[in-house]
Image 1 (cartoon, rainbow, N blue to C red):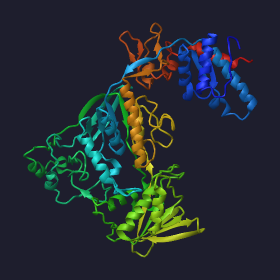
Image 2: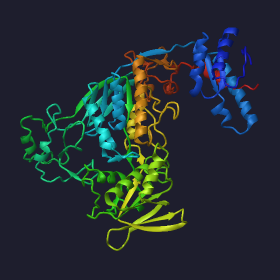
Image 3: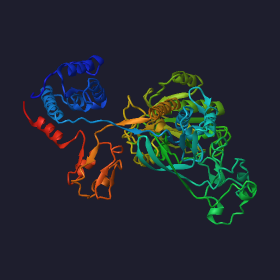
Image 4: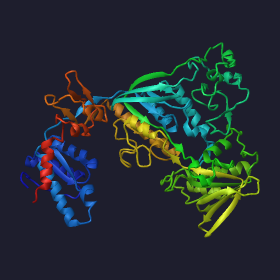
Length: 624
């Protein structure tokens, strides 16, 4: 091809010998443009740019052709694929002649970090960053941190007390001087860019002055509601609470909350205010309290917003919400917990103790009608609940499963232990649950036993639905707020499933825990540590290098139409007093939206100049 001084073929060009071959050829032959035709630029463009720079050439005189995903992996016709490969290489050769030298820019990194979500993932990430001397803002929407783990009784497979291992970490968060804990709060606005994010946080009113409250809880006892009448959210409605309450005894921060939806003072203004009287010495109750807005600047953000359990009402044939003795797995967690609504006693809604319990696996998981994916934790927590139910009631426990998945450390041993304790297993998906018809509250579980090759109808006193994990209902809103992506199943999308499992496509924003996908507690903690390490590396670097493939405005040609401003997904375009648009190169990610939309053609983009694109097109249309 015209202008090509040297062509090399090497099987592993991305290896050290391959990179050295490029460097040596640049020195020996005075090459001033480099084209590599190999795999995806997402994987190795940085590798080759670095090799080119080490040889003394501007790294942006390099261009990469993707012959893997764009050609060999997607075509079965080998001769046609070979012809396409030649077209792509010819296009790259013609394009790279018009490349110009570009330089990376640097932006400073603010040392503070924001962690959104106070479950075990957020707690662990915050403590890791704080222990490294970084100041962390931990924001949790609920009145207390702890997340779903605070609702558990035991953890599999070791049967450790969940509160015993979680509460010390919660207390450590509260007492750490490097952590600012804002519970009962939500992130409302995020602006800026990696290293300099401006975040607005809405702190909802507790109607308690936090600095004055000492957590004595006397206001709860003094409330005119003599009996707790409000469904308790922490206990999933299995118990009751008063309008002034604390979610659970070990809550952090140890502050009560007044619920304006149920408090008489807010509803009618005719409350006797006995809670105010008992708190007169400290005067910590303030019914006129308003929400606060906090504005902070941080360099990095970790999202650990957690998960939602599947609502089995969506699968009506399981009878949840219709038959009183059908429970979700999380509800049973509260029943077996000593601090739960029944003090750890497993008592049905009709007052009976169950003699036979059926546990149904994969409710909302591995189902084309709900979620196709496996939720990863259901098999193991079902085994745990089977052990706890049998331990507390001596009931016969039958597990209905599709496949038993126990791939973790000591998981198989735990499965064998539960089987040896007398728990029965039926390999088959439950197709229907209906009353036994004799008026005693018993239910019939109908399932095809695929091992016996027959349909079985088994009467039980209690049904436990092992519900799967789903993204939180507002995951899409959170995704837009932080300008990150979601995968097809709704969980937050990582930059690369193997090489960057905690990074996102928004620089400086990381994900940890079940907001990225279903996982158990050990995997959650491991991922939160990885996210904290990535954030810490970014902060300690002090600056971040930014790619120069940004858009820019030719002001002489700009007509001031403002077409580009609302289209920019990164809010990188501002409007000057001179009635011209200007692009903030730090905020710009080089998506090209404004370039394509500009009616006057005044917006251009580095590495995607018109002449470069036209030459590339010409190379494809030119036959050898």
